[in-house]
Every structure is written in structure tokens, then in C-alpha cells.
Length: 564
Image 1: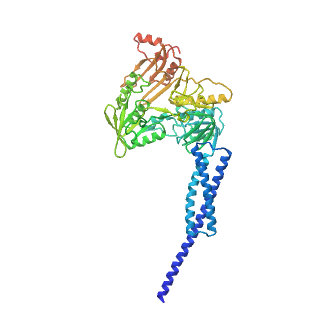
Image 2: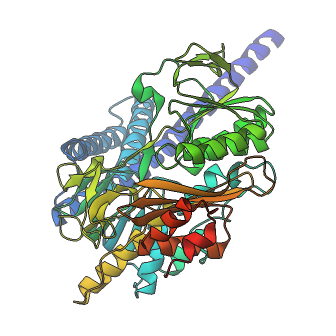
Image 3: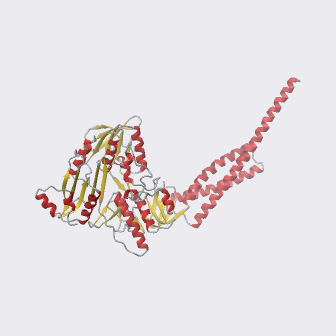
């Protein structure tokens, strides 16, 4: 009897477990079915929302996106029908609980995918409309926004669309104070418009003014005649007036087929994300070897910052002297000597033709055309930039690699303006068309375009843009400014000894007997303003020629005292 009793007890226990498992499965099926029902309700809501938007306004994005949306609608309707069928089969017990559970699990997974895509397509079918749209979130965008507010902008009228993740900032800081080991510049410290001594426009400022700041949003299609912009995710933005402020992108050595140019720790500097990666590597490679490829703005400014960070720095340039597009050979000689005294090695007249990497893929050497090989832990490349105009090709007139505008920065397409790096505009002072890549022009052209837009709306007229080209740089303890045009014969004056404690010198470019360009290293604010006035007025250079013939020593006062 005892044996039979134990057998019965075990059977009863096993039966108890089986009942518990069946009850659990039933409960699990109920829970899963309830989950599926809720998801189906959400899917039906998405279907209705998208269909309503399509009926209200036909979809405009590219064909591929339109086809994807309609395919999604077909799949969603099919899945909806299948779920309703499964629900009826389960209620009537036409299929086993195990098979039902499997079907429910499968449909939950399929509906999850549909819901994710539905959110995206819901955005595609939503078109946001603004009176004004600025495409590009750099310096020009920030200064244009401030000018719009000054001109009486109403909340909800303006949107700024930027592929960067932060509000507009003063880009020149990235190659200067951002890289310093102590007291480095960081956001929010250099948001626009602090670069011109104005108010710092934090993200909250845009919200307070009713300006929609659409960050991390890249526009991939622009239909200027339909006045529709489409983002990478399919979002659509309609405008009445558009300001193109897309700026430039860096030229990469990979574009020229340079061997090994895709190695790690080869950096380009354009956006704050670029600078952040460089700063991180500076900390990781302390006091290592840096090679700067390029002898222009980026090369000189980053080279100085790297030397201040106590790196072994070598600059490599294919040109015969640094800043060749602006400096004369004599001016460049001063800066090359000054940098050499600071411990920066400069190699001129030979380009970088290849890079070697270690087993981790990190750059370890730079190969030059003349056969030399330079060891490197970090490489920073600054070999030029290209204006970002591809979105608008075939829709606007172009000239000198930019978008052609009039003196108000309006293109040949009505209500479409272009400012900053991308604009080729009438340079009134020289009576020709020019494109200027500099932060000062980005600021001023953006402000002028906004004033022109508002004046046009009010039936008023303003003067055409009248700009004097201006360039400047700050590196080590040096500070130079240039105004005007560097054409004609240069006349140098002052102390160009790179070993001087406080070097100060300048230059004037003389063409057809008039001063057309001015340069000054180490000048005061007042002196810099004075040479700007000279460059604009273009006075006669006769007195300078006379002094030079007489063997007199020229100085800044002799340049700026000319009957202005």
C-alpha cells in the first residue's frame, strides 16, 4: 500500500504541474493577445493619420519615399486583416493554443516593425510651413536670426535647419582657443554673436523668439520652385523665402587619392564635432608628434595651438611660402621665422603623398613627395574648402564656384537668397563678382540679406552691399589684419624681425597709383580701423612713393595720415 500511495502522490504532483503550466500558457496567451490588440489599435491610428494627410495634400518627397509609404500602407492593411482573423480563430478554438501563441508572437514582431516605420512615414507626410527658412546652421544663420528679430520677426515665422547638433556658434574659435590646454573656449561661451561683440544667442534665445531651431537635420533635396525642402528622414519644410547659408566643407585628401589618407587620427577641422575628436586625441597623445598638412589659415593657427600643447610640430606645404594667397614672400618670411623660433618646423614646396598606419589603423608616418618620411601621432589637414552648393545645382545661376546673387544677395530664383561662403556677389568697391570665404563676410552678408528681404516686403529699397574684404588671424602672441585687395605692388614698412619682443610691421598694395590693400601686424584697434578706412577710400599713393624715393623710413602713421 505504501508503494501505491507514493505512486499516486507523484502522479497527483505531476498533474498539478501540468495544470499550472496550462494555466500559465493560457494567461500568457491572454496577455500576448491583449498586447497585440493594443498594438493593432496603434497601427490602425497610424494608418488613418497617414491616409488623412495623403488625402489632404499629395506626398511630395522623392519617388522612392512615396513608393515606400504606399507599400507600408499595403503591408499594414494586410497585417491588420491577419490579426483580426487570428483573433476570431482563437475565440472559436479552431487552432491549438500552441499554434495560436506562435502566431500571436509572430504578429507582435511584425507590428513592432510597422509601428517604427509608421512613425517615420507619419513625419514624411507632415509638411511644416514657415515664412522664412535658413538652410545651414553656421555663423551666417545666427546673425541672420538676430537681424530678423531686430526687423520685427513674429513667433513661428522662422526656422533654421542645421545638420549640426548645436545652435549656431562662432566657428573661428575651433582652430584657436578651443584647442588650448588652459582656458580653452567651450560652448556656450562662443555661440553667436559674441564674435562681433554682440549678445550670446543660446538655444533658449531662439525658443523665446519663436524661432524653430531644427538641429541634427540634414536636407537632402531642395525644390526651389516648389519651395519645398526634404530632410534625410523624409521631413518636408515649405518656405516663402529661403536663405541659403550652407557654407563650405573641407577638402579631404581621400578625394585626391592620397594613399593611406583614411587612417585614424588624421583630422580635418570644420565643425565642433571635428574639434572634439581632435581635443580627445590631443589628451591621449600628449607631447607626441604632430604633422600639419597645409600652410594656410588652419595650418598656421592649429600649428600654433599644437605647439602650445607641447607637441613636436611640423608643418608641410606644397606652396613656396605660407598663406601664399594673401601674404607676399617677405611677409610670410616673418611668420615662418617666428614659428621656427617657437619650435615649429616648416617644410615648403613639397606635398604629402601618403600615410602609413600601425596595426591599430592609427597614422604613424607622413610620406612627402621629395622622399622624406615624418613620424606622426596626429595629422591635421587644412588644404582648402568647397562651397556646399550641390543641393541647388541646375536650379540657380552659378559663378566662380558659388551661387550668383545680386547686391541684395537674391539669386535668379525669386525669394531665394544666398549668403556667406556660397554667394558670388557684386563687389561694389572693385566692380566685379567675387566669392569670399570669411566669417566677417558671413556675418555681414547674412544681416544685409535679411534687411533686403524685409525692405522688399515693405516696398522699400536699401543700398546694395558694399563690402571691404577683411581677413585676420590670431596665433601665439601675433595678431594681423588685412583689408582690401592684395593686387599691385606691395610696399612694406616696420619691424619684420621675428626675434623682436613686440614685432610690428605692415604693408600697402599699390595699383594704378592708389592704395588698394592694407596689412598690419601688431596694430592697435585704432590703427586697424585706420587701415580699413584707407582700403575703402583707396587714396593716392603718391606721398608713399615720394617718401620711398627719398629713402625715408615708412611707418603706420605715414600710411594712415593721407588726407582721409
